[in-house]
Image (tube, rainbow, N blue to C red; front, side, top):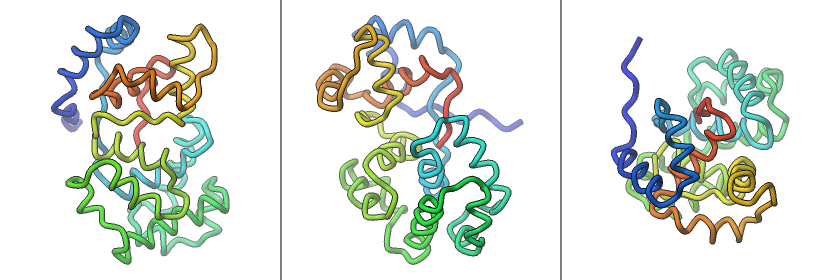
Length: 210
């Protein structure tokens, strides 16, 4: 077996700070001592997995992803563009998601978006470039910032899992909207990605891998 990928350099400091500030997060962090955020490292695969995962469960997304990799084992932009649309759809993608993944692949293949520059760009600049691609909205771009670039302070206020976790742990089940969540999450800065990740773990102990 290969070595376990290293945690982000800020992870231990972020955990300590959040646990000190927030008793609920302290309990969740202590309940999940052996899991942590790691980067897949491949921009195209991270974005493609995020597109696959739009509006379906983590379990369903994992199943579709495995079938998609069977269709295009290299899982590169060129491999997706070479695959027949019917085979991509047969893997479980909707026609719309087939178009989205092919459009993403075409943007990268043509050089109209610039993955090599993203590590040095700020969060909003990366979001701006990504959301120019069909099928990539702010949520998908935020998943990329968290899971690929390992940005520490992203709060995906439109994420249903995060909203559900905050509702469960802080609001006695009362729903919370995006604006409220943004104000609520200000207390977790500059480690809002880490807080979000642990709140996801409170709902699903097995980390999703975008």
